Length: 308
Length: 323
Image (cartoon, rainbow over all chains, first blue to last red; front, top):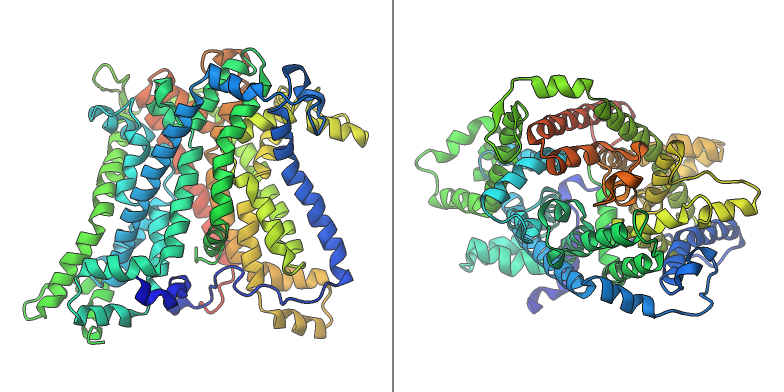
């Protein structure tokens, strides 16, 4: 891996054939000196930032207020009530939910990354009959609404005796996912073919090409897929609603929903507890974002450049 | 690159048989086998989790099935029933109204923010991150948070409106305002679209604007005749994705307005979105045959709307260097 490190960026090159697309912010606006003409724009952005960030501040603040002050909309709680967090712990197995979410998200992300990369490499490297047709089929599944197959897929997992377990939340990822296959194929196409040819001459197997050349060179893309899938899994509500009944198996969104049902509108109106639980569910993703931010931005920006 | 001779036949679809002719280098045949080896996870997954389920779903949509007794064939009865089901009409109406409300608003706001971001140089990176943070908030948490922010009497949003002399509506209880409230909740998470637009804007060649200025074009002309066409690919992509997502609205509406035991106490008809109704029919009351018909209707609607959008895009989307 270290031998090809200097080429690290190679994976970010787009498909040479359709040239136009560039990774995001590779070429930011020229670093001009600070000019007065930018001031009104900065003012607009600052105002917008306040609108986007204030809900977070409100969330943190509300999660630390006593029950009666949740709605007083003061920025800082009069007396900070850390006990809200121990209350959440006390009323619901939140730690268990965090652990469940971590396990499910990692299983979902690792499996989908590896399987999608395998398939993507198959499409990127080889020429074979029906290739374009099959790739078109992959792309068309992206348009398929998940709700269309929700019922039969449930029945399949039921037949396998796996409803009521966390397996259906991630196991489909063993078979790759269309969007990630598309994304990774783009990156693999950017790896100069000479590397593969040279390795073949040296007797490298096809799997070796994938494992020892394509994967290490595509680390940025793999991180994007990992992070996207962790996020998708971490926030998914529908699947846990369908498959999980035992509260000890809940992932965070499902658990949070049950907390809302118990303490929210229909129940005891303990919004400070709901806010504390919401913050617990949010913080891990924000931390992940802080770590992988650059990769995420490049990954999203790449979508806009794709051809419909 | 000795591969070129092997490449060409496979490119045209009709000649796939030629690849299998005897006398080809063995390497080629082993390559094909290897290729399908790499593809096998997807092929298996497609068969088991897409193709077969679609067939099962199609079959179930013509049956009465409650998961306990065997499916009973009822012909087109489910489809007849869904045309006359007032809840289907309601759910469809809610979903379409919401999509029509949310998609253009999201595109306009995101484009506005992206265009401003495109003017501030390096600072754009920082603000881009800020706008993206809500996207990293779990949908259920965001829904819980906005349920409070949107509260009619005590919520932050109406309190803020009060400061400028507007008395805000009851976002979470007034049927007329539930969908705008949900759209607002979703708008908070439009950072992904902003990032896509900003990337597209940064690829518009500067000399186009300079040439236009020489010709005396005003800023609106430049926006209409350069910016919009040059980023039309990104606009089109986000329009399709946002529309498909909107038509499948579930998490936020379900979190805010539907719940476990208290189901009926605070569920509101104005928040009954199509996938919520589908979910209730399939897994709440176990009308799995009927719900399968609902799923096919949704699939058909999404297909038609996407096809219309693709057709429109042929007229409006400009792809550089294509055709």
